[in-house]
Image 1: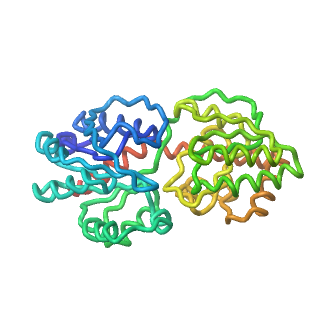
Image 2 (image 1 turned 30 degrees about the vertical axis):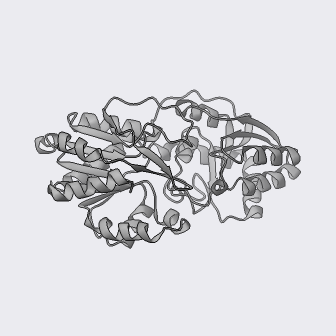
Length: 363
């Protein structure tokens, strides 16, 4: 790392802490000589129940007011300008489009600071979500005016290009800490894991489970929380599917939960990436997903370490039965997943962010 970069002060503005970025922030803090600061709009959002052990890096909390936009939250806060004037960063990395991020963008332009956009979403997610006129206008106004772009997946590059961005794209995938874990016996056939909301397609998954259960009695683990909890659990009961339910699991324990299961069913209407797929791969749990997941064809490769399938109930049922009846293929997929997911680590992701920073100065 050049002394020039190490002496630059860098601020990263984002919504709330998330467990899959804590190690990335820690790595950046070390690699950037502790001149790296993360500015959070808030400590947690009202619809989140997770408990996160925050990493060792510089943090600033704005305690912004969260505003519910239906499927997500935005934030109102003007104190970001005071924080930036005091901190005086040379480079801003902006993750999101809440007011503090927008004010940060214009602050950087006014004071001729370098500014990078980073996004956890992608073109597929945005196409599924109907943006209002203001959101579209905002993206057209600022997305092409950033100095560089840090993308969660290759699909995120398409999102930026849609609004006029042309160069300086770097892919820094979401990464789970590659800890040594104690593998346990695979006592469950299938796991479903995620928030109980309509976009996670639990209705679809339960129909698949019902088809399979008619042919081969299965044991299912369910982990999740949310407004559709009672509906989902009642459906499982009515179809006489043998299941074990756990409401929520701390992020540092989730891999152990996955390790007890053979296959993770991951249908979705849209997922910017799907870090649960990383966790499943680390647990040697084979993933079946669809093209709507950002990790599809980037982390989960069809017929190599899992399946990427069209959302067809019979197709998913047939593939699931095939896997459960074929231990050789299941073992091959799970081993491939474990080896392949090692590439998606916090060291690689932080190095990609540093490459984006270097590109601003043509280093």
